[in-house]
Structure formats: C-alpha cells, structure tokens
Length: 93
Image 1: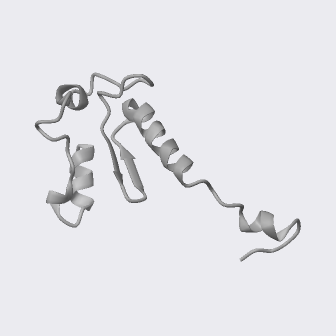
Image 2: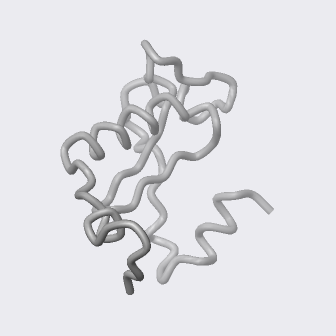
C-alpha cells in the first residue's frame, strides 16, 4: 500500500488529500521520485504548511521543509520557558 493510500484512508474525506497540482511548475520533478531538493534548488520539493501543520513527502524534501520550518520559528521566537522563569528547583505544572 502506498503512502498516499494510507494518508487518504486516514482523512475525513478522500478529496482532502493534497497532491501536486497538474499545472504546477516543475511537476515532473516533484512527482518522479527521482529528484531531491537541495539547499539552493527546491524545485523538486513539495511541502505543505497549513496553520501549525507542516509536512514533506519524503527525505528528498528535507531542505525545503527545514527552510520553511525555520522561517516560522524565526517569525515566532520561543518565549522564555515557564520552568526557567520560575527559577532552579521550582516545580512547574
């Protein structure tokens, strides 16, 4: 069973599966499974970002995924943790 089949089965509706659009630029690179992205060229990558959810299809999309995820982290820097603010030895719930 393909990953697409497994994901589609888990969705509320099969129509919710997002595939590379037929008219997408560089579609063949994205769907062939023969081309990976690189740090300087993400034409082969297909990464989905919806709200707080990020997904890449396979390790060949890692550069684009990392760049996108790092960008979101940069836009929303982590706040000082509650544990650090409470001081050493404090119990935080």
